[in-house]
Image (cartoon, rainbow, N blue to C red; front, side):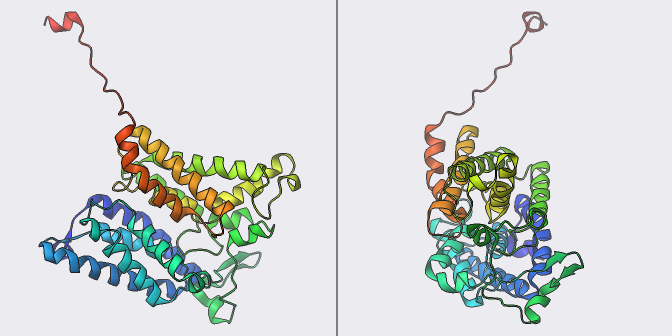
Amino acid sequence: MIDQYFQKQDVMRRLIYALIPLFFFAVLLYGWSVLMQTAVVFAGGIATEYFFTRQRGKKISEAVLVTCALYALALPPALPLWITLVGIVFAVALAKEAYGGFGRNIFNPAIAGRLFIFLSFPVPYNAGWIVPASRGPQGFSGLFGTAQAAGVDTVTAATPLALLRTGEIPPLMDLFLGFRGGSSGESSVILILLAALFLVATKTANWKTMVSTFLGALTAAGAFFFGGLIPGLSPASFPGFSAMVPLAAYMMSGSILFVTVFMATDPITAPNKPLAQFIYGLMIGGVSMTVRTLAGFPEGTSFGILVANTFSPFLDEHLPAPKKKTRKIHPAGAAR
C-alpha cells in the first residue's frame, strides 16, 4: 500500500529505523505533546511534497519522511503547533522542492526549516523548552509528561547550555542517558551513539564525516574553553584533569551529537570526495561551536550545517579525488 504512493528508498528507511528509539525516548521525557507535534509535522510535510510531486507525475520520496522525522526531533517540545507546521512547509517547499525535488536541494531541509522558524518566531521558540522526566535516588519522575500535568513550570525550563552559561554543570550521567532539557530528540547521547553504530554497520552513513564533525566541534570547544571564552566556564576553576568534566558536559549538551550523526552525513547535501567530506565535517563542527560560544544564539548547529552546505559544491569541485590504485600484473602471470 505504501509503495503505491511512496518511492521506495532503502537508505531512507534505515534512517527512520535509527530514529525510532529517539521518538520513543522523547515521548518518555515529554509526553503526548511530542506525538501531536510529530503528527502535525508528518501530515504537513507529506502533503506539501505530494502537492509538488503529483504535478510531475512522480511518487512521494521516502526522503521526506526522514526530513519530517529530523525536523520534529529538532524542535522544542512545547512549540506551538501552527509554528511547527509553518516550518515543515517551508522546509519541504522552499528548501527542497524549489530546487527541483529529491536529490537537487543544496541545503538540508530539516535544518533550513528549523532555522527559519527560530529566526522568525524567536520568542515562542525559546519559550518551548519544557521540564523533562528526571531520574534520582528515588527512581524516575515526570515520565510521559506527568511533570507538566502536575503543574511544573513549562516556560522557564533551562537547557543544559543555559545552565552551563551560569557556571552550573549538569550531571554527566544525566547528559549521557538523556534526562535533560532540550529539543525532543537531541538529549540521549547513548541512543545517538547506538544509532551511529547501526548507520555505519549498515553502510547508511559515512563514519568519516561523523568523526571529522566531532573532531571539529571538540577542537573548537576545547580552544574556547581553555581560552576562557565560554561564558560561565572558567578553566582556572577546573585545574588538571577536572577540566575534562565541563568540556565533556559542553560537548554532550545541545544538538551537536544529533547533528553529527544524522545531518552532517546527509548524502544529498554533503560532498562526495573523501578529503572534501573530512573538511566538510570539520567545518560543521567548528562553525557550530563558534556560533554557540561567541554569538548571541543558544546553539549554532543550524548555522554550521547551512554554512557547510554552501561550501559543499566548492569542496567537491576544487579538492582532489583519491588516486585510483592500479593493479600490477606479475610478468609470470601475464604469460599464462
